[in-house]
Length: 467
Image (cartoon, rainbow, N blue to C red):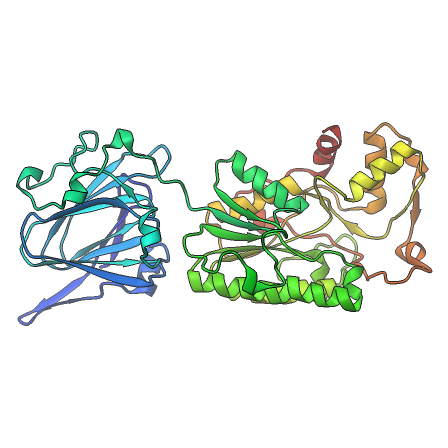
């Protein structure tokens, strides 16, 4: 029976493989993706298969930590396998050893040092990896000396009697090893409200990021993207979008909206799928027509029915993202961060003595960029189930008029200065105004079910204005 067991090293898994033998020899399914996934193995997505043939007993290789995952097994013979965690973190330096024959395999996560010693002659050691070897990739290895006294690996054959390469003998001791950092998350749209929050929250949490804004990553021209291959990334978080809702209704804006929100996303999804890299993508309430009665909220599987070009292009982008095996689509609404936004505008009007008229028949909740960034990072770093989620802050469903009153109150101004108007009254006589959903309320339950606690919008607004 195929079973998987854990070790002292987080993520290092031992797989017991059924081996069927008779008078002719034996047979095993060395790699059977469907069965291994069902048993709990991460989806490796191998792209290269390597075999190391070792003629002599005592041949010893390692300790090499590589910037990819690998699936180690033995075709013939037996080995003593030793693994040392060389990743940054609490488990750095932890050791696990397992004797491998044809009946066992080991899943070795990125950054865990791998080594073995042959126990029988003519041993064939084989491994699948989920990135292609290159000279550049080898420069990102982390090495440890086989004789390191801290790891204190109990080699069956003393190293002085074993076959080692001069290169392996020269590897550093654990005290001199620089731990391998986690693979970076690629953040696109890093110059926007959400993108800036993503980078800041990731860095505060010690999560490596590779961040690109419009100046370094032109979404409309995939041929110019500075990163052609995505292998080696932890995930991609796409916070880039053409969000000028009214401009999207013009001929030039329509072309840009489709180029950024749909065509570029399709190419992004293709590259993520090819590389086996997860994709988290930010979408919007504008994919709905907002005709749900007030008091009801859109579930994640509500039918898409966008009213304008912006929503249509974002709906098309969602369709492309769903082609990636590991993906998270996160719809949001009414985003508030650092920079130009509704809350900043209302605070400015209050301070300048302007008495605004604000729409009172569009319903939804605020979403603060820091909290949306935390939700995206939560999904990516906890391996939450693939699928579609909604993220706004929690609390009562309100109108823009309600939010404006809160801003005036929290900044010490008279909220009665704000006049409520309908959308029709507000847009009367104005050209080029895109249709807005009247109801933007989103069901938050699926996100909360992953363990993410959604902060209250009223509390977060007070904190935001206080800053």
